[in-house]
Length: 150
View 1 (spheres, one colour):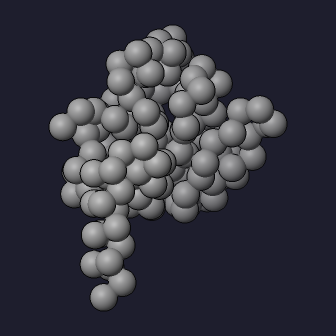
View 2 (cartoon, helix red, strand yellow; view 1 turned 90 degrees about the vertical axis):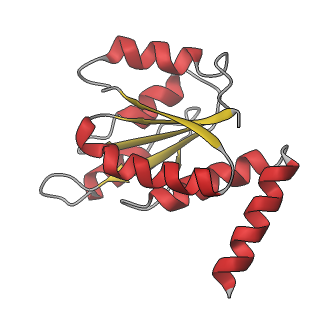
């Protein structure tokens, strides 16, 4: 299985959420990688990750972040790959701050956004994007959607 989706989160505490996205991607037959890298604590590493993502074979990036949630926007600023922002509930605002930070990107740097702590939808959206050019992913996605509709 080729790695098509990069999942990046800002801290090790976000790995539980990332692993749920990874599980759904695996169920849909999609290869993935998980990286922990902070937009604030290691911005150069984030830049290198985003700039090199396409050459590494990635087609979609899921970027999960809590609090100020800069990571999805920073990643999107360095790549033309689709970036899916995954707001993570952290701190006193329960993820609302993350949601607003991710969804309010400036014109020209879009980040698709799913609900707070909803890694499954991030994975499904990534699958929908990949299904546009991958027949196997499309078939797996159709099977999945049929199963949840029952």
